Image (cartoon, rainbow, N blue to C red; front, side, top):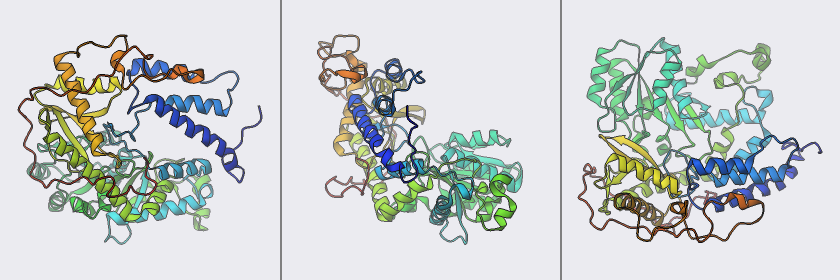
Length: 540
């Protein structure tokens, strides 16, 4: 076998081009075989099928690049939960923009390592400019704001606690019951006291309880507020929390991993009023920024706040090299080798600009409001509350928690939809986290129809003339023509003739809604797809 070509250099693009054709074809074929937001059948079906398609992973003799790419990428795509599908809406797992994914390919081909300048001359300059620009968005009035790129919100939150510890010693963290789990984990990893958890009875941190806690606790204190909770997307009262921190001489960290990109929208930026009063802010652009993971940041108002991250390794940042003008990159992360994630972010920001990104944010939030409107008009469903960002909680009317959980798992098992779950106000809710700006009103209605029909099936039993065959209940669409050739083993459903599609149904006699009263907020009209064209290069 000849020596495989490399991705870099002047010859690299020519070597990549035919391989990319194979990858793109495999991505298409895998998605077509899947035929929905995720593969039907659950782990008992997906795992053995994937193993059959990909094994042996280490053969004695290689199969060649095109065969390996075709087999493994097709299998991965067929078995994926695809966030680009409008019914894949469980988590803060965004469908990445096509241009961001393309930029990520360039980063992989060039493969700069962001731990010394001689491995990443241009990439280090781009990262420095990008982090400074994004930090300035958060701290527009600070003299020298800065940020470091992280693997996501979890690493950024851990860095925030680490920097507070380095400033003040073993700080006592205070957070709401709505805070991300990474806060408690970071305190544990750093040997800090267990966080004091303040109630968040309405989904946001209770100010009176926070005031009482700060009054009783010994300093130094670090309060953690959340701008976009994982369960409901709520935003804590940032300005009021900052006031309490000032009164009690506590520092403030704001976890804006989810809600931070609202800064780019003139319409929704007021929701983050007070963000610039924090001593540090977490941002995660592989959520509401449409980036491939990873794309997190930790921002601080003053560059020197990052000084504790400095580390010396003579083979990477020798003193005489630094004195001679070579940038010292080791203080830009706790990691040594790391990818140039700044490239895809910079490409996206430059390609779309402020208005393009604001449009993506605005239409995504409008989509969430439209879903809430549809739920309120559906007697068989209860809405938890109107969305703050793009998270919508709802549940079948009159159903108990066991039924709600079973509806979710049944939708997963059938390959119909990926919905999350959230437990709040003593009940379990289905969670739709909408991050796809291409989702249409028809997509949303179809999703609700799937929920109501599945609930009816579970509560009233299977429909008349049930399908036959052990896998009939997994059918997600009409029978397909039998596959032939090397892809035949990748079938996602039973052979034609074994099952029929079950049409969605709605309950004949809806129950009275028992959901909490929704807040009185103006309805946000969802823009019609033809009224506002999608942003350039956005993934379809």
